[in-house]
Image (cartoon, rainbow, N blue to C red; front, top):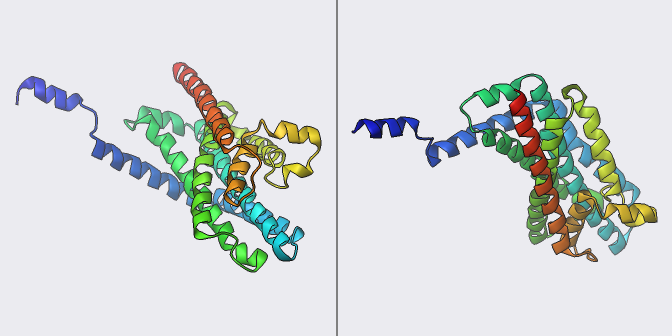
Length: 267
């Protein structure tokens, strides 16, 4: 082989098969880490499950009305669980690792930077979808029968997967911007008001008028509308909902990229 060919092969980046294997290992390592972090795994799964069972028992009604209420809560608390998995898994996790020097170590390694971020997104998606399936499985406990058909379950999982992405972007910005030691407290200051004002705990229609108007600017509101649409709760444009979530994602990723470049320049 000519010397130029040897040089090219030595300087060539990893091929697609190697990259896929690398990404797969990083995702697996991230999942194992999050599962071993009992504080995260128990809170990420337990929080929405407990809230779902609590509010379902409070709002239990006989007949068709009770079934529709239970379906409403299934959709909204699936969103609640997905938002928490993204904000705590990516936001708080990234802030912690940044404060303990893990992020600098990752930057110094030959691993592509995107593999680190994709692994965090993938682990958040796994937790989000797991929470959704767990709430679906608890449906008979709440109403005495399954609350969703197989087709509705598939549609709900699709909405949850798509809806997790903007909140993963928010978690990325949060993890890059906040002081490392204050992650959990600040995440809750963001997570809980977004959930309540966006209608993930109680229907937005039960909130004061000014809060109903304000809610329509929140990503949590449109996330819940998309999930509720799966069960036949209409009244809002789904195209607008996806557009709002896409806009939030693009804006948050743009700001995160800027913060990332600034932090790299200072490193």
